[in-house]
Amino acid sequence: MPIFARVLGCAAAFEPGCLQTSNRTATAARGDTVIRRAIVGALHDAGLTPAELGCVIAHGMSAVVDDRLEAQAIRAVLGDVPVTAPKGNFGYLGAGSGALETAVSVLAIQHKLIPHTLNMSIPTRNARSTSCMAGRGRWSVPPRSC
Image (cartoon, rainbow, N blue to C red):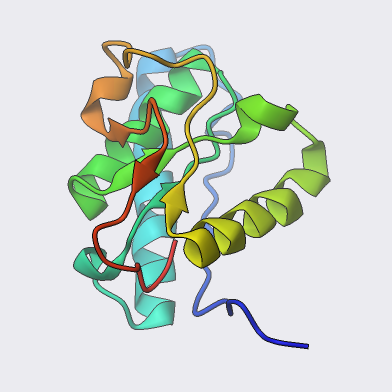
């Protein structure tokens, strides 16, 4: 059986109490930092630079504050990389979301297409901090990773 993709690196970050506070300003500041740490760690583990990424499959589960923090962290660490959030096509599947989004990533690489973000024709004010894919995008060159 052919190998279509492989995981080059991964990372996790956690801040105890980050989502358990009534002070949303403090939560937002810490949440952004935690997400940035995870992105930087994954890049380091993979031995990649932001310029080597073809796209980002965002967690994007339609939670306004969390999606804004994720978009800000992606933009801060990775710059203007194309971002898509395919979860809107199949919903939040809990622990199964990661496996399905991995399959979406492999298919995106194989077909050289970035899947669109369902129900998004114009990015909201908060989403404009990333290049969210409102339609199907085509890579001009095949990405190394997604």
